[in-house]
Amino acid sequence: MTAKIRLYVDHPLGLGQSVPVSREQAHYLFGVMRLGVGAAIKVFNGQDGEWRATVVETAKRGGVLEITDQTAAQKNPPDVWLVFAPVKKARTDFIVEKAVEMGVSRLLPVQTEYTNSGRIQRERLQAHAVEAAEQCGSHFVPQVSEMVRMDRLLTDWETKRSIMFCDESLAGSSPELPSGGKSWAIFIGPEGGFSPRERQRLQTFDVAHAVSLGPRILRADTAAVAALTLWQSRLGDW
Ligand code: SAH
Image (cartoon, rainbow, N blue to C red; front, side, top):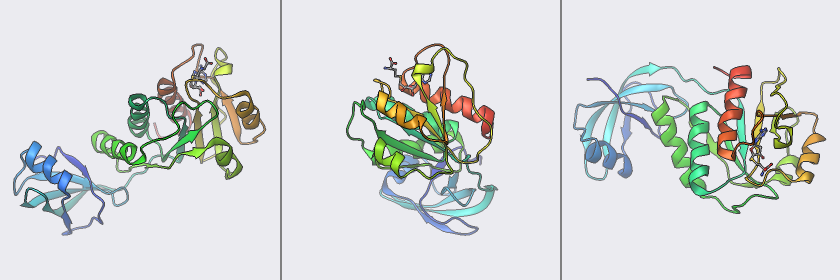
């Protein structure tokens, strides 16, 4: 039987391993997808690669899978963070989902001076990241961090991580990305853009490179996808 369903599990994976099915997963697998004992799915946990698993027990609120064989070795995305200012709910969901599909190692919501939303539902966003990883065939689920303030983030910045600072004031110049550096972070501002103070501060960072995303001003969600496309095609694993 072909294993089309991919499921993220928070459990060690290895040959012959039994993996408990959570209540939500049981609802999805046995309720929605109507899988029964003997059905095969694929599972991953973010670190042990991808494995084939067989359903050995089903219940309304749980069940058990047994790991049969490995279908792929673990593969992680390049070390690129997406630092983004949360926008409206649906657009923030979009940013998280698309970033996982494009390949990022971490998602870091940041509160900038002009950030419209002062709060995020971290767990909801993390669940979106899991779903996106399940759907796009990734073996890795980037962590969605708690929201941090931009000034705090910059004060604590690790000096080896390069910054691709997407600066809307450069719209119109050609997108140029320096080569080199293994660890990166892409910065995307809120709808109101970066404040003059934030722009100035970023410019004082040796590791920061201000980059244009073309002649038009993009919305933050579009900008995140465009920036990741640019980065991945020049420096990433595409
Ligand atoms: N209100 C601002 C636009 C903000 S767009 C203005 O009118 O100028 C939201 C974010 O997307 C920006 O902070 C920037 O990080 C990114 N962005 C959008 N278009 C861009 C472009 N052409 N070049 C570089 N960054 C861009």
